[in-house]
Image (cartoon, rainbow, N blue to C red; front, side, top):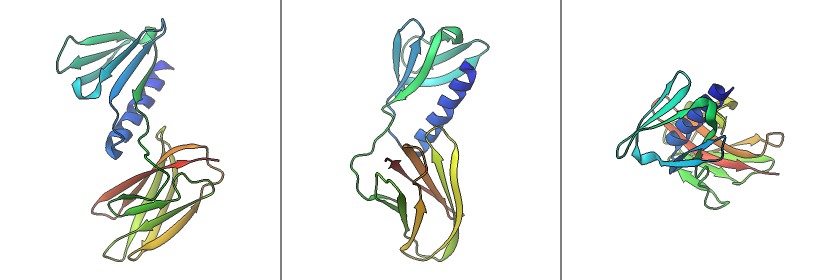
Length: 171
């Protein structure tokens, strides 16, 4: 069970790194209540050995934790959404953000082509996929009313580049 939680945390860390969520610390919370914050920028390697996790630091003594003594591992901060307005990242504009029932996606592109749209939850689950044919400033709307509240990542792959954005689903 703890291995599954750690793997899920590492997958979330990879997604967060890809989309630039500005995680600053890896926090290891032990069952006895000790919290060890470790700067992401100071981690040289992170290794999972049988029954333990080893963190080699760029500066300082390596850290080691028994998996039996770890309650959870998480990253802070977990979000970086500044305001509920249109966000601009490369070719994608999302609004409203936060969204309740519908999410509008505007794709800006100089060519008319088919793109792959993928939305992934913070836990790393693929929530939505669709192939879109678009032209410059083409708008698409997705019904998200039945989705759970939380932070989601949207990825657009046009075959040459992958653009991403994030949005918050609220009730």
